Length: 298
Image 1 (cartoon, rainbow, N blue to C red):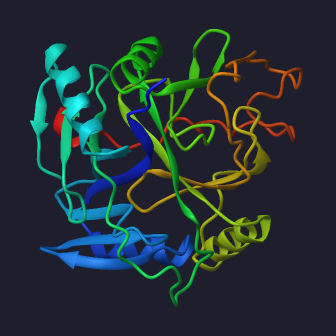
Image 2 (image 1 turned 180 degrees about the vertical axis):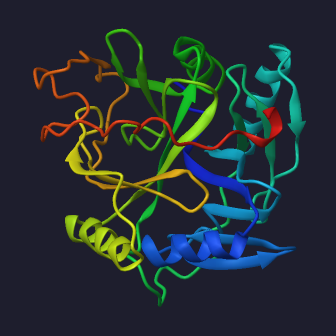
Image 3 (image 1 turned 60 degrees about the vertical axis):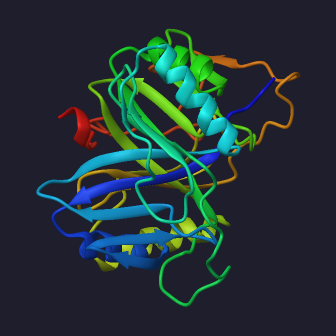
């Protein structure tokens, strides 16, 4: 079984206020600003040059979801597969610094991806600053009209593996080579990025994020709770641009693609299956409403 995608790479946004969006993410979650170029602010949680970037633009949109490929050969293979399917390639140059090769494209279900070589690991492991300081950007969760089209694309063209699904394929979760339960998740809706997520060290970090939101006269959107699919303890809040940010700890890690079988979860109005929250509280009304459109497909 050959993997093309190693792990979650980065998320690139446009926003009218890059400095404000970056400052909010740094103060609440604890990422560090690693670079500023031509008005773009780059942030990272670890040694990678960046995991999130905010570029100047008239409105808040998603430029691309970056997926870190195994190597340059994997980027070439993705590009070959895209061309064989007649999928338009937006660019074959990386959006940001620290990546040697990339291919950026609009997937058939409306999301914009950038498959790229590993981001340069050129930052210090630790940094001085506020926030809870996560380990890494963990995953993204998309909305798409046809979740089975997403499944076909991610597994057949990008070589990702299905980790879990709901019985009616309303929700699907996919993983890369690193084995974490999901790098990309999807549920039904108009094409948007619903949330991007960070992997924290401990439950105390999630409490710190919630307390920081209080000091900013804001509040959590949902949580804490523990997901069924993925097993991670979670909280969610909405950032200044209208995108949801998840912070979590303890996501399941799958150590064998050959032995693991994707689970099927029943969606229930009761607590019978606890697929969305093993601790019981359902998501609030309107939880799935927020999200940001993709700039290339507006």
